[in-house]
Length: 189
Image (cartoon, rainbow, N blue to C red; front, side):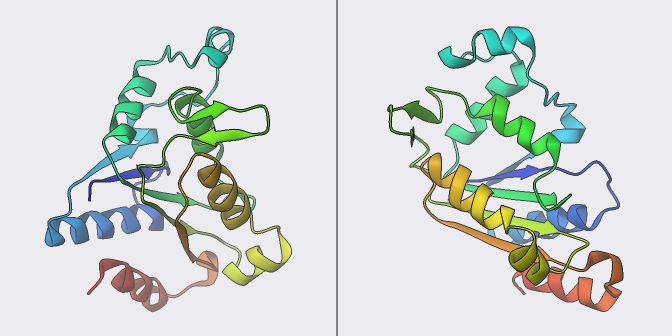
């Protein structure tokens, strides 16, 4: 299974970066082929320009990073996302990545009754996040956007039928032991 990790965090000392390192070490140990898209390190511009919007419905990519990212997506059958939950949702950088990379003709087709996803070759998506709010608070009180909108909405609409979400909630009040335990589980050891 070829895995593509989409990593979205600007700070290399973050817990999200520790998750990225842990998963890469696991995949290396297991012999799992993978590649990493690091949106901040790549200098990805998440803002759709006027020129990009003018050709959006044609599915045309003007940014060379978009073309590269599409090639990486086309070559994988598992997507892994790692990002912080900011204001109960995905970071703006990741939202912009979705807007610019997952274009018509590449990842979906208009049917007149909704979008038909064409990323059906992607067998699963795994989402790993960290949040200040406890996970149950996100699920019960803030709309459960990662599960409901990102996984069950956006990814499903793109043709990815299987998605999981693991969140390390309560980040700001967590102990080193709690963070270590989460990373140990993520490492598969």
